[in-house]
Image 1 (spheres, one colour):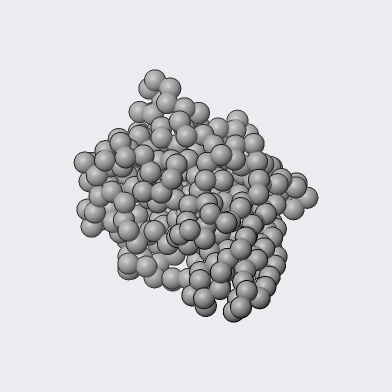
Image 2: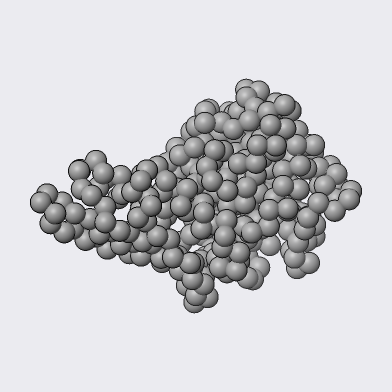
Length: 320
């Protein structure tokens, strides 16, 4: 049996709820539904163990992780009727780089190999403060938000110098808008069609989505980064501002349109509607990023592990 990967999670919202519940269901049933790689670098999904959790809401601090994931405004559905307590008490998190607070959190990270930063996007100072805490604690750091952490050369260089892995930025959902949109654009190019125009619209009902609507700058650029591999064609792709619709709860509804020209200038039009539970799409990628980070740490590979690239929208070298 592999040595379990001890993970600290920052932010106890819908994405962490989906992750915690999904791992528990997998352990209880052995189900491989939605799991792309049951074993990755010798580590199974069930080898992921939660060692610490951080949140800023007074309603969450001081309670067990498996209680907190069901507290409002979290609205990801229950995957099983009962979930035993984890034994992990949610600790008070950072709201910035306050004097002494980064060191306090670094102490609370003792024993964790990997820090998964899953707090809302749009708080770059807080994201970097947690990256600093993980660096002090000697842990690998995963930034799942669109805030620039791994793309910051100074931060990345410090992780390299410390011999620690740094993964980021902004996860590409397991089957989300950017993944589907990119695949369709690539297919057009491979089949010799000429892109005329394209757009995507994203609507969601989670608190994370609400925050992204209010702090959309980094997310908008990150989505464009995810499509940039299509070269000059990406200049003809538009990403509409995100829309927050509370009644959608944890579901995201996306609309993708592609207009192109085929042989002889004849027209081609593609319209796709995608409806998914956004937190589930994040969790399906989190389980791989965690294991990649843990294996890189154990193999003493520092900096950004290239194998994480397909799971991220904005890896080092992309636009901020």
